[in-house]
Length: 338
Image: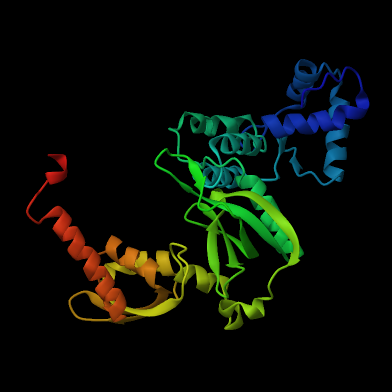
């Protein structure tokens, strides 16, 4: 608070509160004389110890948790240091907002902490540049989509993809018309769960790929006309079955995995799957997942996972593995570098 208060005593309690917010915590207490000195230096305010005592008592009567035992500090804040660090880290590693937006949000979050917290997170500005979206309309899109979901109205937008020039380009010229139902965060990105108006299934759209979004006057399609909702839709279940946010139906998958894979399985799929322990440190796992997503997941963990069924998935993985073998191992090692 940049204020030249002079001798405006009406502001004294708020100036004392600002000093307590900025200079104190459980490890850093201020005496009444130190508060008097800071009022003089920061705000050109002159007062005595009696005024400090009375105004702190007034602040406590207003509900502020101020401890005055062997010194004075503000005990209760909007966010504690651990909460602020968690929020700042979430912004830092979010891929759905631009670097400029991330920097601005972090500065706002830092303002909730005192000067000792600022010192703890001073390294944030020295971190190497993380990947953030180039789409400066992401926050606007989030606002419009949230409003449209609340108003139960359709939206139109341009959906984009990266070209070889590292810039976003429309996938097609005409806008998508979508019924928006839910916004979710997954793997550091925001997604819209909706229904492309021409079809009857659920589809996913990355918010950082959306531009020129607009809320339409037409009401959304009732969920009863979207087959995924009509058969009983659960957001946690949907997210567990769509780990990479691919569109399409889920299938029942059986796989053999090493027992030490339990941590990874729970991280990816939650706890809604069945396990039967086998011999030799193996287990038979049964779960539901989007088939395309499971293909990529199984390839990622190929050294310790074998898909047993469905057969279409097993064949699809075998085809990819065979193609990779031919690329990397068959007659012509490094031939692309010749």
